[in-house]
Length: 272
Image 1 (spheres, helix red, strand yellow):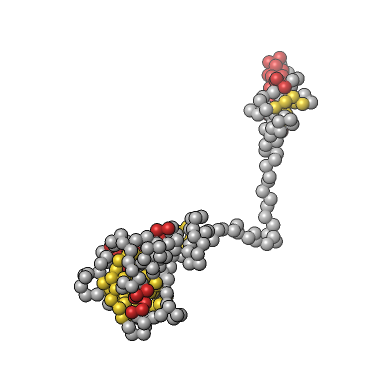
Image 2 (tube, helix red, strand yellow):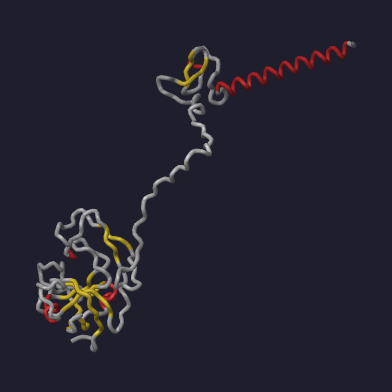
């Protein structure tokens, strides 16, 4: 073998040894987390280790006093276990139930709730008042008005200090309970367009009464002093004075007093 070939063979052997050392070093760095994190780096003191590491047993490792987790970051990751086909299917996570659908209540036609009013903490504690922690539907609309519009007749105290709350919306005044006056749900009140106008209320017993609109039975707001601490009105209410109930022949002793199915219509003639 010539001298040139011997030199070439020696260079090849030396280069192969060099490559093997590089591969061994790379494998060692990967195994010990060495590299950018500096884990496993040979050291004589903590000063030669990167921030967060200390020199233990001649290698840069996590600081047990500070509970650093640089080198063991990947080791602590839980491996996803393969799913066993024989395992029962896992139940889906519980999802909070959505609020009830805003469906129209009986007699409300296609009028749907527009939102919910949450009773404040200062709600009054009467039987029919807003209850703390409860939510009440709000309505911007009322059922369509026809020749005989279906509604519910309730009773309201229009006098000062009564359970009707503040003064009437139409004239900012209180009214005697001897007056034939009513309040209408927000949609029928029509932003005051029916103020001072008359409606005719028809009871199931065949009697009718002509009453004047003086107030709004608010279907959006409530649970405060202005509204007697009552919830927002349903969208299909005619809130009448005690005089209206007497005119319809329904006494306070009747089981229908305070809540009765009726029909109503706009009276001929705008106002008195």
